[in-house]
Amino acid sequence: MTDDLLTRAHALDAADPLSGYRDRFITPPATELLSYLDGNSLGRPLEATARLIDEFIREQWGGRLIRGWDEGWLEWPLTLGDRLGAVALGAAAGQTVVADSTTVLIYKLARAAVDARPGRRKVVLDTDNFPTDRYVLEGIASERGLELVWIETDPSRGVEPSQVAAVVDDETALVLFSHVAYRSGWVADVVEINRIVHAAGALAMWDLCHSAGSVPIALDEWGVDLAVGCTYKYLNGGPGAPAFAYLRRGLQGELRQPIQGWMGHRASFEMGHGYEPAPGIRALLSGTPPILAMVPLHANLDMLAEAGIEAVRAKSLLLTDYVLELADAWLVPHGVEVISPRDVTRRGGHVTLRRAGFRELLEPLWDSGVIPDYRRPDGLRIGPAPLSTSFAEIHQGLAVLRDLVEKQR
View (cartoon, rainbow, N blue to C red):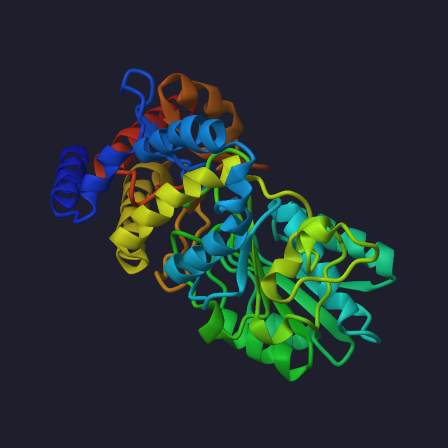
């Protein structure tokens, strides 16, 4: 069986139309890294990124110095936002901006949203959403005297339209859910949930951190009001890379974000008295943009545009199908449970395996050069990145996990 599964991995790699993209990434030798299965947490760097950063430091920063602001840097949050919207988000120009961290942007948009629905005192969220989303909304509720309405979600699934319909009413100001659940990889029914929320007169906000760059997104078509996502996972922006925010054009001017800084002013360099927000998506900016941290996005968006998000998604599903095949053959017989959807229409870009005692296997896995992602209390997330992960790499990593599970038992 093992030989058959390895033969299958080699056949899938041979037939993979995206296999050539693996050579574009900086990858340690196999003696140091056997299998990287955490692309859903931090993407690998591109060789092109290293060249761009060196060029930026030496030629743009070092050569142009402060003149760089007038020669393009000031517009990067918007121009990169537009490019990201076109390549990965299904968003027309003028609705996406790159700035700040995910947490800060969630705060900006969520605060603006509840303030734009005065008299509505409820915010709906789910118990298994990523902690930042929950913590930020808890803080906003405390600030604004709002009631949090919690949907109890199954950690092996995600929020369902019927659950949303059961709690959303004419007192709801905002709902916030994840497009792809960080724990299980469950893909939410964004269109139907938006329909339910809008029928109640509320605003719908989505966290795209685990889908941007991996799962096709159509924010305009789906009728999304607000969205936030990070760029260091499938978009390979690097540790702490800036996040992005989407604000539907029809809401611009109506929503006013709460962190009023000079870059979001209608005339940043007038240095005048009183805050007047800039028109359009620029109003979401606050302080000086993190220009150096934006450099890697240029390289990855070029690559993603070339590969195509639909092709990336097709390979992602093949990769996670293969993870499930290996898990069923090697791990499930030893008490490991798959808690991610098997239905491809509901499965994002990673597969979560659950078993008591997985925490004890992290150190030996890392010592063996195998890097998955661990989520308390007992979950291992297997997150292959379609443009940098091969099927043989998955086979190698899960073979090590299998041997450790067998030894642990």
